Each structure stands twice: as structure tokens, then as C-alpha cells.
Image (cartoon, rainbow, N blue to C red; front, side, top):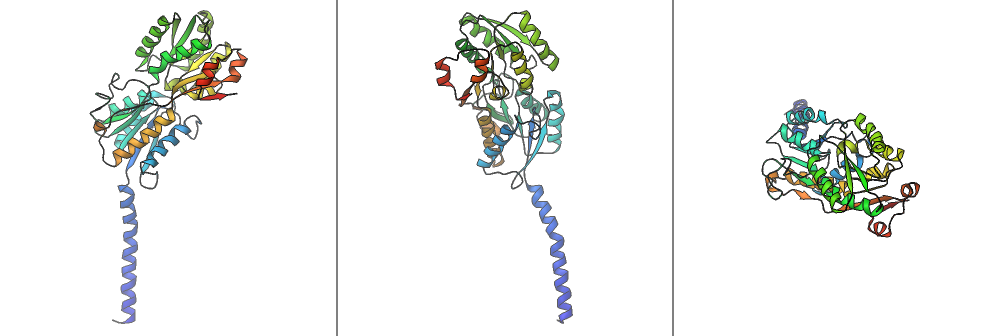
Length: 335
């Protein structure tokens, strides 16, 4: 074979290989599993309070051996604290044919994902009872296509009332702000009312599912002459933590919240499950499902890590003397 012919053959071979490289790259990219991340919260780049949750999820996913952009792709869908958008966003992820959906930001996201698909695996976070609200058949054997983490946010409402009573033992009544659109609202109200009767306190139930109704709560606090405020576990309230903290501040009223972010926003204290730890566990479960485990066979995990956070500066401003017992129990004290 002449040198010129050899050169032509080499160029032809090189050109053919070059043509196949993009195809191979595209094939590899299309084979990479896609996780649809559905959340009722605002996007993390705009909402500092969301960043630790999303980061904790990615940490758990990394511990399971998966990294965004390396061997898995994460597509985010944020409802921007507008739960009504969740069904459309969930449908988008189903049409995208994602490998699984991670439904976060409360029961409302999980229920939207569950309504959108009965075949794509779902890993959820919920503050309520996932059996009672219809997400799974049982905690140990979920059945169906969904499993996840129950952070027990609503189940701790009675404990928050107990903590508030220890902080202000002379308090005779307290207002409980609850979102009636939350699937766990009725059960949470029942628990709080029973706990209040047991310790001889009166609870006034105040319902709010819009920003305007939260604003109206301030007038209700004055009108009903309540002495303290307790906030139900709800992602709608979490997305408006600054507004709710300001509501309590306007009335110089002690308040207890379900998550730490209210305290960092200037609230008095919070007691609840570690939300970030719950998101990390969701990441671990997502990794297991990508490796072949079925949601039906993965028991719903329940929170085991709880945290009491107290803002001493706010307590002194009210003024309130925080008992030594509470300070000893606190996981974090903000001066």
C-alpha cells in the first residue's frame, strides 16, 4: 500500500472515530439516572433557609455513592412556597421520566408526587403520619412506590406545649397557629388540646393558610388576650418565618416554633426533629433505590435526632428567665 493510500485510510479511520465519540458521550449521558427533586420551598439560591436541607440531601446521596453531574443528574422543581404549583411540577418530572422523585418540604409535596405517579419510586420527607395521610400502607412495609422519612414534626406539638409551660409556668392560655390545609392539622390540634387539658392550660386555635390570615393573627392575639404563641409544623409557615417571628415580636409574646430557622430569624425557641438529618437520610434512601432496592421493601425511617434551640437574647428582651433545666436540655443556646 502506497504512503498516500495509507494516509487516506488513517484519515478515514480517524474521522470515523471522531464521529462516534459524540454519540458515545450522548449515550453515556442519557444512561445517567435522573433524580427529580420536588420541593414546596423556594429555590436554594434565593432562600438561605433551604440551602442546608438541599445540601444535606446531596450529602446523603454522596454517602450512598452518587454525585450530581458525575453518575447522577438532579433536576430541581421548586414551588416557591406556593403549594398549588406542586401538582404541575410533579407532572413535569413524570413526563421527564426521572428514575425517582425526591419529594420534600412536607406532606404536600409527597402527596403531589404520589398523585402524579404510581410507578416511579418516591422518597419523601413528611412531618405527619405517612400512614394516616395515605402515603404508605404501613411504616415497616410501605407497599406501593413510596417510602421515606417521617420527621415527627406534628407529633411533637404536645411536647412543645410542655416546654412552653416550663418556660412560663404562670401562663394560663396559649394560641396555636395552624394551617387548616395541612393534611395533619386535625390530628395536631387534637394532640395539643389533649395535652393542654392534662396540664390545666387553655389553647385557642387560630387557623391561617394565607399571608393575609397570618397578618390578621396579630389582632387575634390581642383580642383573645392570649399569653403565648405556638406555631404548628408546616412548610407554609416555614416559608414565612420572618413574618411569623415579627408577629410575636409586635406583641412582645413568648413563642415556640417547630424548627430552628424560626429562632435564627429572631424567635424565642424551637423544638423539633433535626430536619437536615432527615434530608440526609432521604439521600441515602435515594441511593439505595438507584442501586436496585424497591420502595415497597424499605421501611419508613423515623426521626431519632431532636433539637431544642433557645435564643437567650430574645428571652431577656421579653423579659423571661429561662429555667436551668431547659438550658441544660438545650442543644443550642444563642446569646
